[in-house]
Length: 83
Image (cartoon, rainbow, N blue to C red; front, side, top):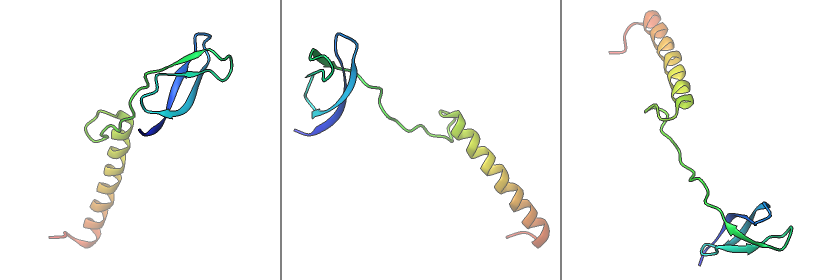
């Protein structure tokens, strides 16, 4: 069985992490000794910046693209087309 880092909370409100077997549902709270239960954590996902699902990444991509297009236009005006 693999060991992973999980979040746990005891009935007294103490929240902490513990490196446990992936099947572990409870641990002993290191602060008060009560039984702490496993918390459900939000998944870590990477959203696509170009699709608009992640607005700040999409905005950054658009700014880089505009800058690149300005440079390309300037180069084209100075040196002709790239055909």
